[in-house]
Image 1 (spheres, rainbow, N blue to C red):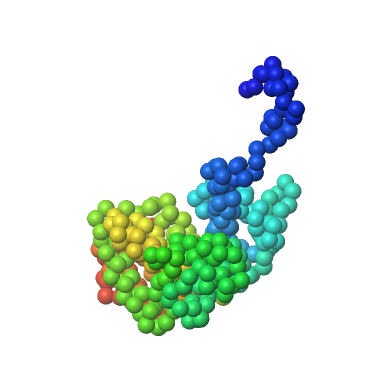
Image 2: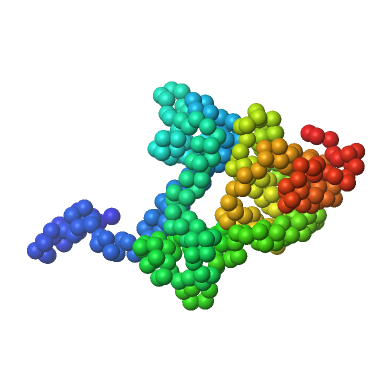
Length: 349
C-alpha cells in the first residue's frame, strides 16, 4: 500500500496527477494477458455447458418418470437422481425457466411447462444442439456425406460462415465425443460413424466382444448408487402406461446403462474404448422407431443383467448381455435369457 506522504511527494515531482489505480486503471491489453483473466471466458463457457448438460439430465429424469405439464420438480429429488448438490440443480432449473420449459411459482418452486413425452424428448434434443449448433451442423453434414473424411478449420469456417475460433471449439466438442481427431498440422479427420447398416453390424460385433469382457475383467466393481438409480428409471419405464414410452426415452436409459457397465470395468483400456464407442452411438445414430413391446422387453433384459451384476454373478451377466445384444440386433421379441436355465438367474432385488 502506497503511503500518503509518498503520494504527495510523487505528485509534487510531476505535472500530472497521481497515476493510481482509481484514476488510471491498468491498460486492458495488459490485463487481458494475465493467465487468470484469459481463462475467464472459457470458465464461463464451461460452467454454462455444465448447466446445460445437467438440464438435459433433469428433463431425461422427468421423461423417465412420466411427468406432465404442471408437475412439481422438487430440488432434492432431482439432486438425488442426478447425483449432484442442490446448487447446480437450481442453476439448471433457472436455465430451463429462461427457455420456458419450467415455470417458477413463488414459495412453491419449479413446475413443468411442457405437456407430453414427445415435447420433452424434442426439447432434450434441442438442448443438446443449442450450444453446439456448428458441431451439430458439421456432424449432420458428415452423416449425410456432404463432408469428406479430412477437413481443415479454414474450409469449415468458410462453409458455415463462422469465425475460426467457433469452428475450432466445435471440433473440440466433437473430439471429446470421439467423433474427430486432430492430425499433424491443422487438419482434422472424422472417425467412422455408425451411419449405415454395415457400420451398425460392426458396432454390435464390437459391443458383443467388448461388453462381455468388460464384465468379466478382474476388479469389475459395480457402482451400487448409480445402479440403484438406473434400476428405478428402468422399472418406471417397464411399468409405464401403454402408449407412454418412447424410443427416445428408451435410448437415453439404454446408453446410460451400457455406459455404466463400461465405467465399472476393472480394465482401463476396455473402459476407455467402450465409453468412446457409446459416445459415438449417442452422437451418430438416429433414433429408429421400435415396437413398444420390444422396448419394454429390452428394458426387462437390462433389469435381468443388473440383477446378476448386483449379486456378483458376473459370468451369468456376461452371457445375458451377449444374448441381449444379439436380440437387439435382430429386434425379435424373445427373452434375453434364452438358453440360460431360469434357476440360474439371481433373485430380483
